[in-house]
Image (cartoon, rainbow, N blue to C red):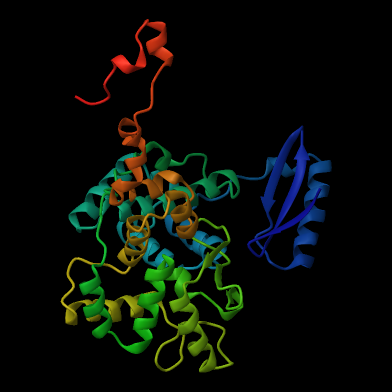
Length: 356
C-alpha cells in the first residue's frame, strides 16, 4: 500500500481482496496525502473504509473543471481544451452526471452541425468528453456509466488535398512579414505541425547535425527531422540575432512568444493580400508531403519525417507520384520468360506475348 504521484495529485494504490485499487487523495501535499493514507489503512483494518456513506452526485461542470485542472493544464494547446470545454458546458449546463445520456449527446452533435462546425471538431469534443467520463468512472468513482461510449463518432472527410503551387508560395511570402516568412518556409521544408513549430526551442536544434527535434509531438513521441541546407542557413542567421533570454526559435517581431491564434490571424491576412484562396496553415504540412512524394521520396521516409503513426495516413499522398508504380509494369517490357505456370500447362514461354 503506497502513494503514487500523478498529474501533481497523490494517489493511494493498494490491493483489496485480490483486486488492485486506486484512490485519489485529491491533494498535491505529500504530508497530507500520507495522513490520509494512514487513516485509510486503519479504516481498512476495521472494515469501515468500503462502507463509506454515499457521496452527493457530481455534476457535469465539476467533471469538466476537474478534467481541465488535472489533465489538460499541462498539455500543449491548453487553450483549445478550454474552448472545447466552454462549448460543452454552454450546451449541457450543469446537470448531474447520470442525466447526461446518449440522447442528449446526439442532440449536442446536431446542434454543433447547425452551428456549422466540421465532423472533426465534433469528434474532438466528444473524445474529450469521453476521456473525462472514463476518468470519472474508473478513477474518481463519480459515476458508473460513460454515456459517450454508446454514441457513434462522426465520419470525417480526410480527402482534402490542397497544397501550395510555387506561384502561390511566391505571392504568400511576398505578402508576409519577415517573421512569418521564416515560419512558412520552415513549415514547408519540415512538414512540422503549427504547435510543434511554435514550441521548437534552440535546445532542439542541432546545426552541426542539421536536425530539429520535436520532444513531444501530437502522438506523444519524440521525432528528429533533418533540415535542408536552406533551413540551416536561415537558422544560422537567426541564431546570430537571437535574444539570449528566449529559448524559442520562432518569436514575433517584438521577440515575444507566438501563440497559435495570433499566428493564424497573421497567416490569414497574408493569404488575403497574396490572393491565395481555400488554404489553411495546416495545408503547409500537406504541401511538404506532396512535394516530397512528387519528387520521388518513398512513402516510408515521408511517414518518418511527418511523424505519422500509421502508414495509412501517409498513403493518401501516394497518388501524387504514379511514377513510383512504373517499375511494377516494367516487367511487361523486359521480355522476361514467365515459366512457372506455363511449364505446368505445357506451353513454351516463346509462344506467349505479353502485349496485345
